[in-house]
Length: 279
Image 1 (cartoon, one colour):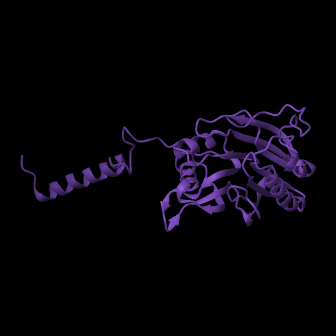
Image 2 (cartoon, helix red, strand yellow):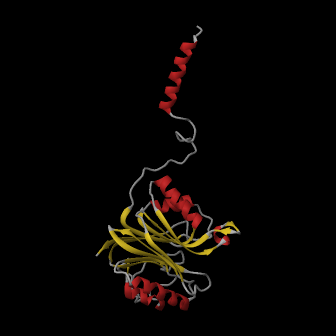
Image 3 (cartoon, rainbow, N blue to C red):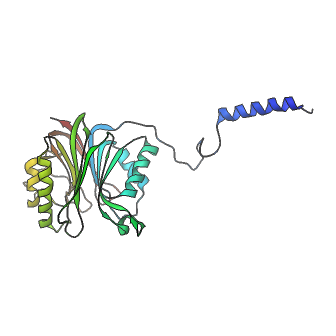
């Protein structure tokens, strides 16, 4: 049977309607066999903070780094050894693959082509970064007067943790065998922390709890692990692959509720998470 022009128009309309209902078969529509499914969106834990030295340069996937973070969904994340490009990708993966949306501020202290890639005239920024589910205000980025063998510094923002406004600091101190440099750096950091009634200090301090250079921090704040003390007799969980505690969540005006140390295949530092409560 031969259809007339009017009949073909009806058939075409029916086919178009079916395509609208079914959706396109391209990657923009239904997922193909090789695509990665997007997880359902979920909320962050509003009183949870995290610090993580993510290791750079390291040949690891930012998809995997994002998955590690998403498993715990902190309100605030402090990263050290953070290349801007890596943080941008991690942030995108957290949103697109896990439904977790974060604001970001950077505390870069170096423009490092060797660590972060890029082109020689526009190398990637390297240093610290803070991700927060709540907006951040009043950011500062302070480079220590003497970083030791590599430039070091701290950054700070005001954001919300546990429904309270709080000043959050993130730092990375000088390398392990540079005690005198770390002592000077802690002095600069502690002076800024002391001006806050409520503060959370995240970072890789490259020093064990009873190291003398950390004394000024212990005088101002407590560790998120109530068993960990600077006396050397406390039971402090290690936070690195070489079985030392270098990573800290110091609390001022907050009480610790629970902490977790989670080793990761994607860094030589473990993830340190803390659930906190405003006093």
